Length: 407
Image (spheres, rainbow, N blue to C red):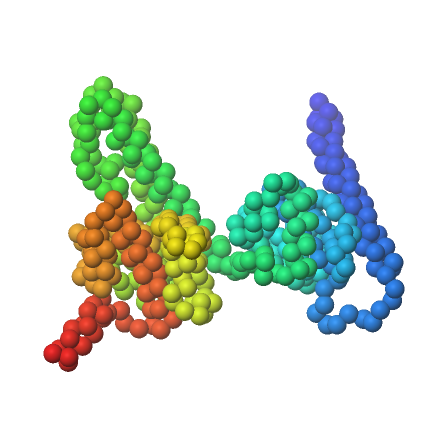
């Protein structure tokens, strides 16, 4: 019996070694094929002067997917050298791109683009991460597949990299710290959905739960739930209470991180309605205030400006672009809602928003909230870059002083 166990235990590692050996053999074979193709192209061209320092040898487009990614190599004359695919893993990308000359590589933004672009840059390549939403040649292509996308990326990289509308990924540390905020954000959304579902289920039986905050929803009186569905909804209340506890733990970790690791968030928390979560998310998303020449550029970056589709005399009113980070945009909108609410302090932002909302109309309040969120994003950037003390009624005081002087 012991002998059988030994034999069984010994066979598993052996099988694993064989599989790993076959995988390594396949990878080496594919890399050798790629290098032969590239060397054949290089040798077929007449000998020329050595390339200048920093010059690129090939123009490469990579269409990233979760498991397999497609690549296309072009030479200096725009001819396709080789096409193929490789696994979306660090091992295969290193094996393929560590042995080729310095090249210009274009890839689409996505889940894997942060670590892949960083890896390719470490290997000495010139890397551009394209924004496909702004590239109609890919976004609106009637014949769209991975092979064509990789080919188009390579051609655009060769022609003009500005047509890629390249984006800049955040640093590794900022991305890792943002995970804490995004994990909390997911729990908040799940709790909100559970609360809305509970209220809706109670209403369906003719009842109505009392108004309360999300943090105290799990503490409502059990008698407020109709007796016929009480046993069915109690587990949901318990789950909401558990989520609230975990969200509180996240909040404490976020406050600790903001205080110890990102002290610049203290300047951003001066406007009432901006807390640790919003200020830290703002700092980690923008990462460096100097990348914006003007504070007004932050609004479009976060998707808080209206779309434009003007033509001649036509200038329709459109929704906001919603580009940029969705979580930060939502947090800024929540801060704007607080500022315009009953607990918001008197400030230039609040007066501006209330004035817009007072115009009336179907969406006046919504437009006012978005406008305040946009102005808040500009204000936070200005405070971050200057480090000034926030004056809630700075514009009002200046206007009053000007009026008194003129009077």
